[in-house]
Length: 511
Image 1 (cartoon, rainbow, N blue to C red):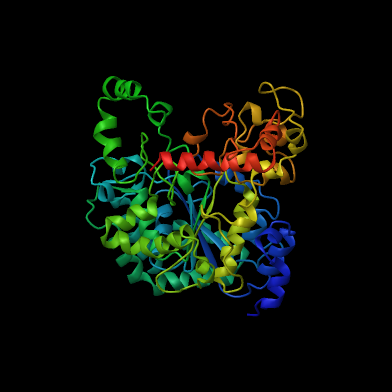
Image 2: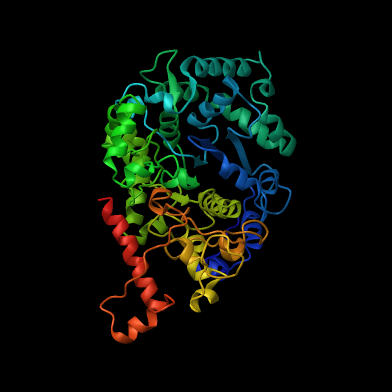
């Protein structure tokens, strides 16, 4: 397989700022045309989610997901990328659906990028709190064992492959060679499939459900990389909301909720799992990454601290997460298959943008193939070429901001700046007010809505009420001249400094 030379790559991408301005449709087509042999799989795991990020992916236009998976353009040869597991769109259900998870655990879909949509709540094996498996689960042990039995029947010729796994018919129609390769892998890895699946279900009885946390931890063991789509999957998002009275510190309201309305649920469950780093929310759901604003450890680090096989699954990703946290740029040199460290990338939003999802997946797929390096990430594990500048820096209403013309109330039919009615653009990183949401159309401030900070850790708690203005920035020891500049319009360096200080205060509150 030919690969892009270093010279060609530098011509194509340059720096993160240049990447943001590239014609990505052309870049992806040029890069994916290099992927001529073998397959790479996408395991799309939905936990506590609303499927909003799935819907957003379907809206992607540059290119769209059908073109990628079906090989309808030069983006990828037919069958080069397959999506065997995605709960919302896959044709299988019941034992057939979980059969794909067993195949992934056994290495049939290697190498695969593991996608997370939705927050992951505690389960009893990780938190030690009985009953938490019911917060999010996929099947029970008996159903998984039934799936393994049917897989054996397929291999023995007693059951047609497409009867158990209809998605293989789709693969066969697109690329018969890939279809045959997958069936050969199932036969060759039969013992590994059974062994690894049973190991994942250790200590469970036949009627016990299998939590989303357990499934995801098991899938992490073989994943070449992890990517999170949406704020819930990245930092906990809405699922991790502490509810206004808790985050606001109103103890009377909290005590009333706990004793009168929930029968002690908050003190018996929520407070216990929160001490372990889960969310202080009704279900405890956290994202894969830490949320430094709300003080959530994130799923990877919670697994790591649990020890045992959970630590083994999480360790390569925690090492990567910590390198990014510390600003250690050596993470960009991580190679596919490198022992001890594997990449994890966040694509937050409520939902995340479909084109952002595809760009990040394209980058990771080509990284797995050894064609492109990993993207540069910011301190919240987001690709800088997407999430570099703030909404404020790219806002089409910037001229009105500079002139000090602010909306007086939400919905005012003017082009005035939205800072005065609660816009969180100065402290949020997101490009879609500039480039549009679908085909250049949409984006909150372009259409008259405030930015609500949905690409940031701390969302929603730290950004509510959405229509409450941010505190006015206070310049550092300002002279009379600087104070005069601040005046009616908050401008320049004073604004940047004040917003930065606000963000630091929010972080310090959570510590």
